[in-house]
Length: 274
Image (cartoon, rainbow, N blue to C red; front, side, top):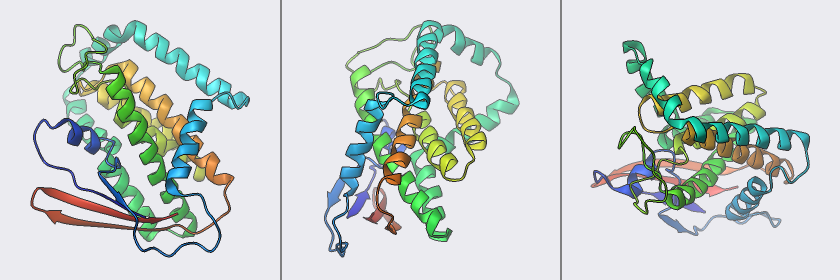
C-alpha cells in the first residue's frame, strides 16, 4: 500500500494547518500499489487501525487494573482542567520569561507531525529489525491520532486562547475553532507510549511529552484541558497499538519513506506493507 500526502501551502487553510500540526498522516490520496502479497493472510493497515481505535474506545472495559487506573487518572485531570482552565492558563502566562520564550517554540515542534514522521523514518532506516517494528507501529499510531483528533476537533469546535483568553467557547461550528483536543499532545503522547513501552523508557518519554504539552499552553495555542485530553487520548492510542501488535504474528514490516518537492509544497510518500 502506498500512502502519499501533499500539503497545499495556503495561509490560513484549515485542513493544511491541522494536518501539518500533528495530523500529517491524514491521507489525501490512498491507492493500491503493485506490492507483493504476503504468503499468508495478514491484517491490513486499515484493519489494524480499526481494531486499535476500538481498543481505545473499550478502555478500560477490558477490565485490567491499569486500564481503570489510567482512565480514572486522565478523566479526573480533565474534569479539573475544564473547571479551572482559565485560572491555570493565566498561571502559565504569568510565569513567562525570556528563557522559556526561546525554548518553548522549539520544544513544541517535537509534537509536530512532520517531526514525528521524520524521527520514525530515521529509526526505521538506520535501526535494527526490532527498531523497524517499533517505527512501523509508531507511524500506525500517528494515523490513529490523525483520524481521532480530526473528528474530535470538528465535533467540539472549541476556541483557542490566542483568539480570546478571557473565555472559551464550544460548538461554534467554525472550522478554525479547533482547540480541543490538542493534536500535538495526542501525537507526542502516542509516540511516548509506543517508544517508552518498546524500550522500557516511559520514565523518559512521558516527561518529554508533558513538556511538549506544556509548550502548547505557553505558546497560547491551547487551554490546559486541551492538552490533558490530548495526552490521555494519545496515551490510550499508543498502548492500544502496542497491545494489538503483540497479538499479531511477528513479521517484518516493509516501509519506504520518500519526499520530493512540488510546485505548491512537498509530497511525502510512505510505501507500506505491514
